[in-house]
Image (cartoon, rainbow, N blue to C red; front, top):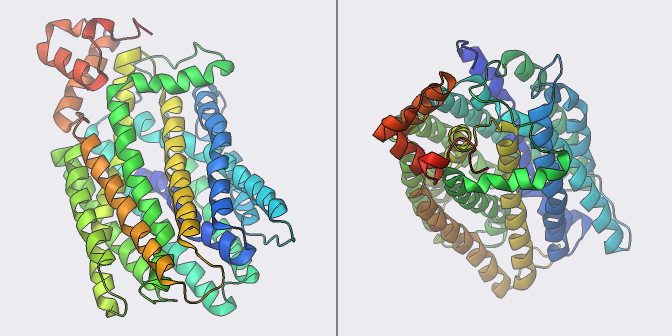
Length: 482
C-alpha cells in the first residue's frame, strides 16, 4: 500500500461523498413510500412491492459493479473514475422518482415508479460501490480507518439532516403536493451532485497491493464471486450486524411520520423531531468513533444498541398529546444510540476485507463493497416492504386525517416491535465479530509476513487470530482451498 499521510482534508474529501449516501437513503426511507401512497395513490402493499422488486435488479448490478471496479483500469483510477461519471446521473435519477404519474391504472403507475427506482439504484450502485472501498484502499491502520469512517458518518448525518429539513421548508411553502415534491427533488438532487469532484480530488487508491487484485473469474461468475464472501466468518457476523441495525433504522424512519401524525397527533412537527434526532446522532458518531478505537467495533455496537432500544421504548410508550419536549428527550436518546449502531457496520467493512485477504490471498475490495451496498439496499427494501404490508393490513386509508383505532394500534405496533426485534438480533450477531484493535494488529502482521515471503505459522497468536477471524484452519488460508 502506498504510504501517504492521511490529512484532515483527505478525511473531509472522503466523508463528503456520503452526503449523497446518507441523504438519499433518508429521503427514500421517509418520503418515497409516503409519496407513493398519499400523492400518487398507490396501494401501500403495491408501493412496498416496488422497493422489493427493485432488489432483484440490484442482485445483478451490485456484484457486477464490485467486479467491474476491481478490474477497471483508467488514468482517473479504477474506483474514483466513477465519481466523475456519476455526477449528472445522480441528479437525474433522483428527480425522476418524484415526477407524479396519476393515470387511472394503478399498474401503469406501478411500472413507471418501478423503473425509475431501478434507474436510481443503478446510479447509486455505480458511485457508492467504488466509494465504499476507499478506507481499505487509502490506509491500513485501525485508527485511521475509524477516523475516516467517523468523518464519513458525520457527513452522512449532515446529508440526512439537510434532507430532513429541506422538505419541511418546501412543503411549508407549497404543501405536500406534486409541485412540492418536484421542488424538493430538484433542490436535493443538485445537493447530491455537488461533492463528487471534491471527493475525487481529495482521495487516492492503492498503488502497491499486499495481494494481487482478483482477476481469476469471468464476469459470468459474478454470483460465485459475490457469495464466496460468506466463507469469511467475520463477514457473516458483519452482515448480521449491518442488516439488523439498518433495517431497524429504516423501519423507524419509514413509520415515524405515520406514528407522529396518526398516533401522537403531531402533524407538521416531524422535521423538528427528526432534526433533534439527527443533530444528536452527529455527537453520537463522534463518540462511537472514539469508542471503536478504544474498545473495538463489536463492543461499541452493543453499547449503542442498548441505548437505542431504551430510547425507542420510551418514545413508543408516550401517550397522545404529551408535551413535545418529552418526544424530543426520548428522540435524543434514540438518536445517540442509533449513531453507534449505524457507524459500526461501515467501520467493519475495511477490516472484513483484510480478513478476506488472509483467507483468499486476493484483494477484493470491490466485491465486498458491492455486497455491502447490496446489503444496505436489502435492509431498506425489506423494511419498506414490511411497513407497506403492515399499513395495508392495519387498514390505512389514503387521505384520511383520522385513521381508525385499529389502524392506529397497528401503526404503533409496527413502530416498536420490529425495530426492537431486529436490534436484539444485532446484539446476538455482534458476539461473533472478533476483529478488535488488538486482533487487527495480528492480522496486519500476517499480511506483512506474506509481503515479505515469511511463514507466520510459528507465531501461535497470529495463527489463532487468523483462524478466529476467517473461520478456517491456518493451513487452508491464502487461497489454498479456493
